[in-house]
Length: 315
Image 1 (cartoon, rainbow, N blue to C red):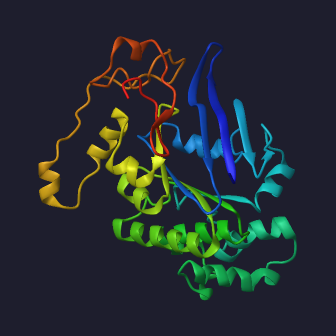
Image 2 (cartoon, rainbow, N blue to C red):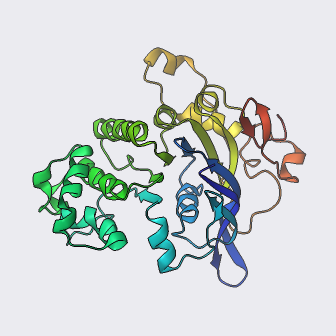
């Protein structure tokens, strides 16, 4: 594995006695040149997992191993500098993730200059190369972020991440703030870069059909825990966990006849609070198939098909 989270935990403390279980005992690996899609509802812990994985959040517990080397629980300045050459992130919001007072050249070159030193002029050619690689133009160097559209800003964010030539790219919902036509362009760009550069990616998103298109494997997260992991096609077309079935059912079909013919999975009940979670399956309160055991014993991920894992007592 290129990188592996082992029982990774991230809790946020609320006062003296309460804490939010944002990420709870998550084990997930990403191999070289593999794209793993991470899906789930808002608040399920996807972004927190990505940021904890790469050290933007301190770990509450567990390990992250990158190329057989355990990464520190709490990053220092030197750790960020060393890991920046290997791991980069594309942030969700293309508007707030770029400094409005810096030119596009300064934004893209910043990581390279921090790592290697030198002057802005000395890396100009490399900045132009990556601008053109992501579909922009060299004459954009002196412009500022407010002069670009959302899709163009996201391309700037991609160029900024890739100029240091990382091995792993964490994409935190990189298309959610973009128009549908621009989403397709950005996803196509990432797929092309993955093939040409041999990148490994953690692709975090809401849209299951988009994640299926870009990913080799898909992981489904609910309230900080993984409930299903497997090949993207298998998880999408043959989901095993009731929560995954609900997510797939809520994803619209492009074919109107199929959309009208399929049966939706309707759930009842409230999403439990992530504060001081109780034992048992976290989905039990909304699951139409739940049994008494589901509310008492926490299910573990286990093999239910070839390379396909699910955490459900009923499988």
